Image (cartoon, rainbow, N blue to C red; front, side, top):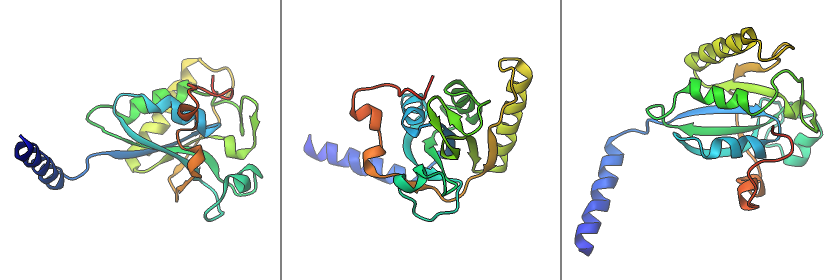
Length: 180
């Protein structure tokens, strides 16, 4: 039985090596990254997530630096997703549903450009899908104010300090006060 299990593991490793990773990346900012990460953590088709900073000009920023609102970075979540299990458009529906995209540089009690609503696209298709999704949502009448979410190319993503990763999960919480 031990040899059979070893053969199975060898087969799985060989199969994985012969099939390139089909996952895609998506990066979203919607206020405090703890709540955003928690919202995507259990979405079917989301393979992994990491919280960090992106969209700014400071290299290797720390949390303390980002909190000064001087780095230009947003608190963001970068996820890997399996497009055969969930579409980018479905991820956008989650994104739109977890925050108020009509408030500029603010979500709940969190204020500053680091809490802005932003979609950082990784491909031209993601850009087109995000823009269409935003237009549809604006026309839907769900919001009376204009949607201020920026749609911008993904730039270097800096992983946040380890204590921020899966922050709410580690504490047995499912949301934070800045996520509706």
